[in-house]
Image (cartoon, rainbow, N blue to C red; front, side):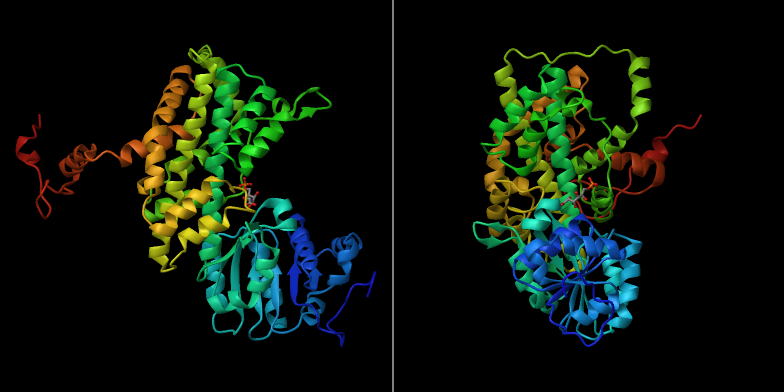
Amino acid sequence: MHGKLRKNAGAKMSDAEIGLIGLGVMGANLALNIAEKGFKIAVFNRTTQVTKDFYANAGKLAANVVPCETMEALVGAIRAPRPIIIMTKAGEAVDQTIAALRPLLKGNDIIIDAGNANFRDTMRRFGELDGTGLTFIGMGVSGGEEGARHGPSIMAGGTQASFDRIAKVLHAISAKYKGESCAGYMGPNGAGHFVKTIHNGIEYADMQMISEIYGLMRDGLGMKAAEIAKVFGDWNKGRLNSYLIEISHKVLSVTDKKAKKPIVDIILDKAGQKGTGKWSVIEAQNFGVNASAIEAAVDARIMSSLKAEREKAEKAYKIPKKKLKVTSRAAFLKQLEGALYAGKIAAYAQGFAVMETASKEFNWNLPLGTIAAIWREGCIIRSQFLGEITKAFSKKGGNLLMAPAFAKMMQKDHTSLRAVVAQSALSGAPAPALANALSYFDGYRQSRGTANLIQAQRDFFGAHGFERIGEEGAHHGPWAMNAKHD
Ligand code: 6PG
């Protein structure tokens, strides 16, 4: 078989345990991970050369790889019932692949979409396959290239029975937290992709808040990249220990050979996005859940894209940049650490609240404790902090801000968040995710808010009614008789 690709189903042995379509970066690494864990895997890519190159570069692992030139050959190479992973670009490519696969598959085969699909597409695909005998799994995979190769965090949605059939492979290839697998069953139909979407929404907030803190150090304190790198390096040894802080430390330490400057200083300040952050916010709004810190992070990427406009506006407003007014840099750095921690608590509280509501809405019964647990390793937001969340959710659901351990932390650290947001506002340095995290906290812990006035306004102009304190039913104000029309 070496060097040759299977062209058709033929009479060759069907001995692969699993198949994979789409040998892009994530697909190729996932396939190697599967092969390395001792499972024979049949692989196919639309461009045959990609399959050939993948096979040629698989080294020892090639023994566990069956490279296929056609989808027929791929299907023929897998032992029935066949689990087939699709790892293509999310969207139309997935529908096309499913359409091409369907006539080749038989009842009980499992199609697994492992891309970053919109969970509403996943639910539609479930519906389309319903009654065909084929089963579908919508599976979120997090951890980037490295995670796919050596152990991602895996969030699977579908029937429990279809999950159980591939659980052995998933647990084998997933990341491990102190020996525990970071692959889990999230619930029916779109649950896995929904959880992955919220993972990414939280990822956006985490990254944005770290960037805001970086901005305050760079512009407010005038610190150099290497100095900021050191701060992140130190924080990574403490309670902020996480993959994103670790890589922030690393990227800030790298010098660009060409410019002979820190590489972050020559990277354009425009961030891309592929959609999962935006979907998190859209769904939060659909469910009526406040996810303002996540939303601010998505908006910040949009603002980042307006580079040319921002340059013009900076000139037009000529507002001199102010350094932060701090008496002690060391003390302010401590506040920044506290602010980041408190901001993180609020953003995670929002992400988990969105999941809790979606779970009720769709009857998913999302295992919030398990979700936090499988995010402790492998995924992009992995952190020590998720260990605390796992403990909080294994005790009780509800808003994270009310979990005793987090309430205790927030009680202390909200003062740092407040000081940092105030400083950023006074100096003119934007910190939208941190500011929204603070407003969320302040709004959440305020028993008497200001929506009474909104209700009065709504009733005045639209007779929408309001509730009186301590009384049942809808009431109206005496606006009409008091209103003066001149
Ligand atoms: C992960 C990442 C991964 C990908 C994001 C990036 O969990 O491994 O989140 O899914 O890097 O989709 O998203 P943006 O391109 O939208 O930043």
